[in-house]
Image (cartoon, rainbow, N blue to C red; front, side, top):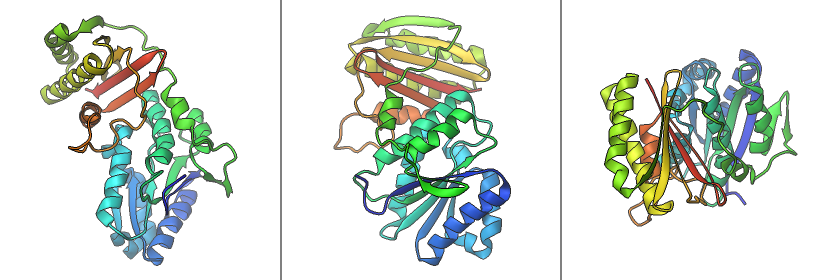
Length: 306
C-alpha cells in the first residue's frame, strides 16, 4: 500500500531525443498542472532538460545526482527533503541514479535504492517519480532489475510491469555481497579492541594516500559501525580491509540482524533510538553497502575514494 500521490515509474531511453522527450514531457506536464518539480540528475542530463524546458527550467529545483547520490543511500533522504521543503503542493521528481561509468558495487546499491523507494513512501506523502535509465550505457543486470523495482516502465511504450515485486528490496537486502578478493587485514574484535581498530584504519588510510579529512571520515564511520556491532551484534565482530582500484574498503561483520532495510536512510529523530551510526556513515563515505539475514548476520562495507 503506497501513500497517496506516490508513483514510481521508469523510463529506459536509448538516445538523447528519447531522453529529452520523456524527461521534458514529464516535467512540463507537472509544471503546467501547477505541481512542484525537482530533478535529481547528473549534469549532462540536467543540461538537456534545462535546454528543452527553456524558460520553464527556472521553475524546476535541480540537484546534482553525481554529488549527493555518489552514495545511493543518500538519495531517499534527498527526495524526502525535497517533498518536505515544497510543502502541501503535489510534487513530481525526475531522477537518474544509474548513470554510466559507476563501479559495479555502486550499481548494486542503485538497484537496492530503487527497490527501497517503494518501501520509503508506503505510509507518508510521496512524489510522483520518473527514474531514467540509459538503455545503451548501463549494465544489463541493472536494466534487468528495472521491471522488478518499478510498477510502470516505459521502454518504447509505457506499460505496467508484470515483474514488479514490492518485496524485491528485502530479497536484495538479504543477499550476500560479492567476495572482495585479497584482503590486507582481518581482525576479530570486541569492546577492548576499539582504539586499536581506529588506529589500524587510520594507518591504512594514510598509507593508501587518502587526504587527511577523508581518512578521518572513514575512521569515524568505522568507529560507529564497530560500536554498533558491539552494542547490537553480539558484542564482537570481524573487521576486514582491502583496496579496490582508487578505493579503500573497510568491512565490519557480526552476528546481529537488521530487520529494517531502510536503516540509515531516514534522518534520525531525537525521540527515536537507533540508526544514527548508519546515517552518519552514509554521510561520511562514498559508498555504504549493508546486507543482513538472521542466519548469516550483518555485513557493512564502507568505501572511500582516494
